[in-house]
Image (tube, rainbow, N blue to C red; front, side, top):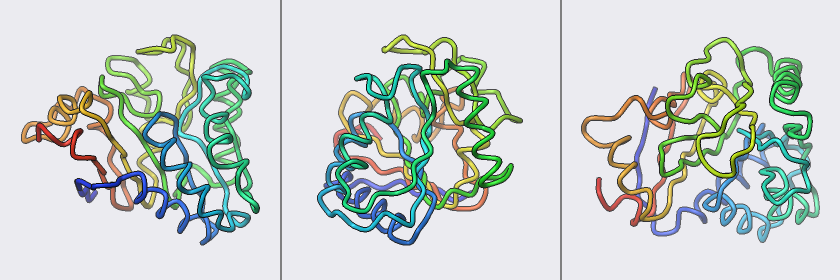
Length: 227
C-alpha cells in the first residue's frame, strides 16, 4: 500500500475536483457522510458535470429513513446528487431496514455488481475526533470483520446514537484510490495519533490500507497543526 499525507489550503475543492473527474470517467464512486465531505459535495454540484455514466455507493449509513436529517444519503442527495443535471446511478444503503437486513442487502448488491473484491475507482472517507472512519468505531467488533463487505453496527460509538451499516475494512481497502478527508482543529490530536511517528493502530482510521492503490490523507492546516 502507498499512502500520501498532504496539507491543502482548500481540501474541499480538491475533493470536488477528484469526484468530478472520477464521475465523468464513468467510475464507481463511494461517498461518505460528515461536515467536511458536505462542503466538497456542494462544490462538486456547482460544477454540474455529467455524472450519468457513474455509479455512486456509500461507505456507511445511519439506520433512519432516507429523508431523515441524520441520513448520509439524504445529505449527499441534497448537497450533490439531486443538484446534478445528469445524475449517476445510486446504490444507497437501506438504513430503514435496520442494521442486519440493510447490511445484508448492501453486501449482496456489491457482490452482484462488483464481486467479492470491489475495486471502487474512488472512495471518499472522513475521520471523527475519536478516530472512527465510515461507521467503524474504536473498540467495536465490526473493526475486526474480515470476511464480510458490509457489516451491521448495532451500537454506534458516538452521536447520533442510532444503529448503522458500514463497509468493512476489507471493502474499504479494495479501492483503487481513496481520499481520507480530515478538517478542523478538533481532530488535530487524533491526526497526530493516527499519522504521527508512532501510529495508534487501535484507531480504525489507522487501519485503512489500500491493497491496489493509493490512500491520500488530505488535511487542512488546522487538522495538521500537531503533526
